[in-house]
Image 1: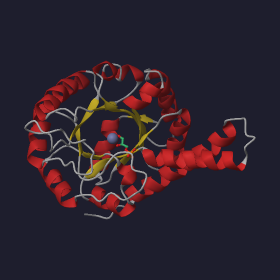
Image 2: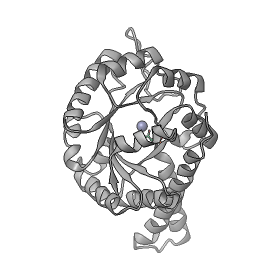
Image 3: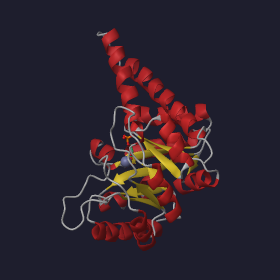
Image 4: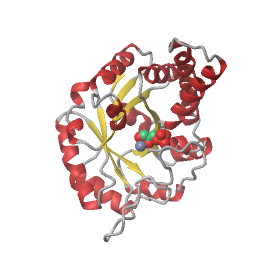
Amino acid sequence: SLAATGTLVADAAAGRRAVAAFNVITLEHVEAVVEGAEAAGSPVILQISENAVKFHHGRPAPLARAAAEVARLATVPVALHLDHVHSTALLHQAADCGFSSVMFDAAHLPYQENLAATRAAADWAHRAGLWLEAELGEVGGKDGAAPLDAHAPGARTDPAEARAFVEATGVDALAVAVGSSHAMTSRTARLDHGLLARLHDALDVPLVLHGSSGVPDGELGRAVAGGITKVNIGTALNTAMTAAVRAHLADDPRTVDPRSYLAPARTAISRTVSELITVLAGAPEA
Ligand code: G3H
Ligand code: ZN
């Protein structure tokens, strides 16, 4: 059934669990994520990033509406989230396309500019009935220094700054920089669990882990036990998908029908999804 992100995250927080949010690019990703979540018997968030919208010629509606339809038919609750939005024009299309939530990403901006842009985005989102996630990870980049990439392995969120940021912007959730990094193809990230504990103490909003593909199972479990409530995963699905396509094409170079490689690709994604959901569900108690 189609659910709201805010509800799934609040339910996860109440149960001291995390809800997995998977980045989808194609209809096959959407079907696979929902199949994987159904196999695991867990709610799930489908997220479409601004980058994925760009791939679809800048139009969010076709994939989002298809995803909403797959969600409606699902046997588990499925929410739709618009991820890593920089463009306010795209933000303003979110509600019409069926998203219940948006991650507004101004983390590359200096602190005061991130705060102002995020507050404006949160105000707009709340008037439109949307749940808004933002990101604060620019602990570098102050006093004119070159800003760190928000997900550079060295970037960290400062707890006191994060508390002020959440109070000033009114965001519903915060993506924190605690050692994960986007687009990792090996699961070698080490998280700063002490910092996560201080962020969890300092903040009343749910915390979101980005770049989770690079985080090993044990670290993910500890992060959930330590207060991470939404776990964003993208690259791991594409690693599984592309490996399955490559294996199929190597095996049968005469392949013509795309379904012959998209079917095993979809199965590979859905297996990855149910495995990762199982890891999150098995998180030890803090
Ligand atoms: O917002 C999306 C996630 O942070 C995905 O990161 O592709 O490294 O798993 P990942
Ligand atoms: Zn991310």
